[in-house]
Length: 244
Length: 244
DNA sequence: TCAATGTCATGATATCTATCATTGTCCAGT
DNA sequence: ACTGGACAATGATAGATATCATGACATTGA
Image (cartoon, rainbow over all chains, first blue to last red; front, side, top):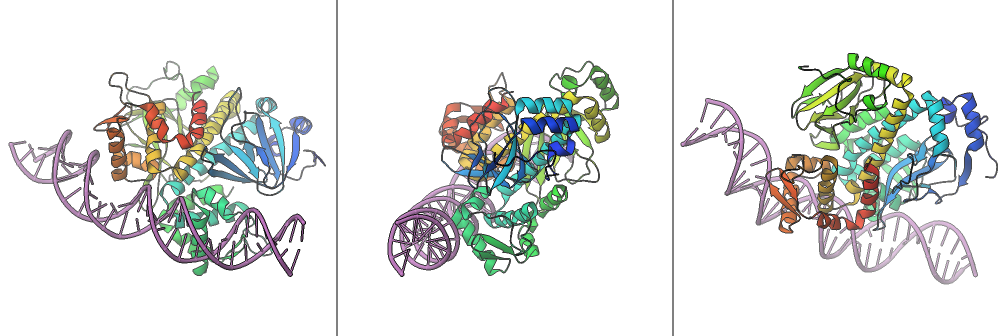
């Protein structure tokens, strides 16, 4: 709540509201939105909470998680600037998805009632949102193959490529522009930190990557790609798609 | 193409067009739709094909699949009457998802151009579609936990409960109202027919189910539920959600 | 009727991965 | 500089699952 950034002057051009909302509605959202800064590790919203609205990520990185009674956390999606996380729907629903900031993140919250009004008055916004969910659904469908069929070695290779596509490389150091603990990588794959470490060490021996604490340098992208070649059809097409 | 059923008289009230389209647009879709009968095993559309439009399932059951170069098929979603499968998007995209009829199925196809017009002229249809995708995305996100973290035993138990919820029971025989081969069940879980058989046999020994060829009787639903109890938080909430 | 075929069932074995245990390393706070 | 705590790396072991092999059974078509 420190220094609110107005939608009118906001630099995050990939925001759905800014891209697809009418000038009138951008102003309305600007007034009723609740912008907050979340520090690394802070929850945007918790699993099991009530349905309330959408969070538009203005700046930062977020993991969307689902945790069972056994306490094992599953990272179901990673989101960064311009993406949307949160609950849709109305009534008294709850659902077992939470979101946690991976680094300092600014997000704008709009509650469901106001979103409903916005959708009803901005058909293009609704359409864009539909297409967003549709694309996310496809990506998640394709991701099922990764989780169901690949070996851990393949999953780790895929994940490294996925992280590069999603977050890019630090322009200076040429490392993945995202810092994840071994535990967090394991949480994406349903594995363990030990297993992730072992496989990363193996990749390092093969000169595919170089580890430097949590920083990971990609040395041989094609080599990583070859590891998942048997499953590559998926990846190709996913890449074509996620390039928008 | 034998006996076309008109949207005007169609009994499938759960169809999105019928539920949310204006009278005018129901007529338009009625004229331009392409209704076809697909027999068991026939493709509605194939993996790697171009983006073209949506299929509204009027009657029947369909598996949505994704297959890699290794030939291993992954069932990413099951759909039945009233559901929508197919490609959204425009341009020259392709994507690695296909759909195959699990039993004789009637589906109505509407191409993307016409869908776009329909969305632009029926805000409530667009909104409903957005909510549909949003819900499907949640379900798929939750499903990631199943694939990533559960043991095969838990996955099979979960799948049996999932099939019961999705397709219900045959009212006469009290068996799951869907016939899947061991291979197909394995394809949902990224496993093998042998493994599925073994676990089903174990469940039969425990009097949780009874096998009769491909027909499966659920004898003790709570028993199946107990098997996945450690992960049940998910399941609970998923159930609350999918009950709409 | 009889093969031919496909599916299911089950055992034996090899492989992969989780778990447990230990050590090393970095960093923050005293 | 010391110390405790978190995280990473690595080895040993146990457990889970895929793979391979075989036989039973049902269905199809000649």
